[in-house]
Image (cartoon, rainbow, N blue to C red; front, top):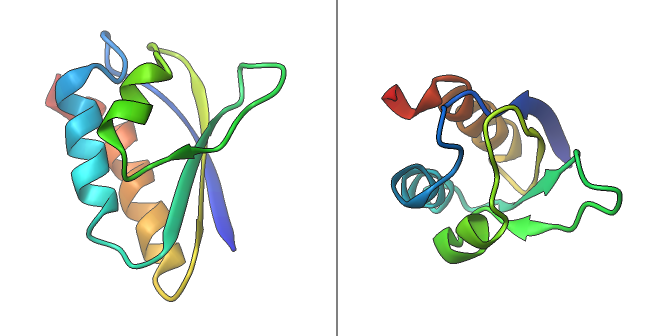
Length: 91
């Protein structure tokens, strides 16, 4: 298991397009990948491969997210997704 913490930097948070981009990128990896909103009292595991679940989490700018992966490509998956979030999705 490998994980990292990142802050959401894009102004509109993980709305439809970035949620879709994030989920599509996560699906490129064989590892199981979840994200957790660390700003909540009881963070729940959200499938990083589900655009709808990401959107339903209503993740806003400044939210602290933990990305956790488990599998053969876990480190590469977390590092790639962390970089994607840190980039602000080009917004």
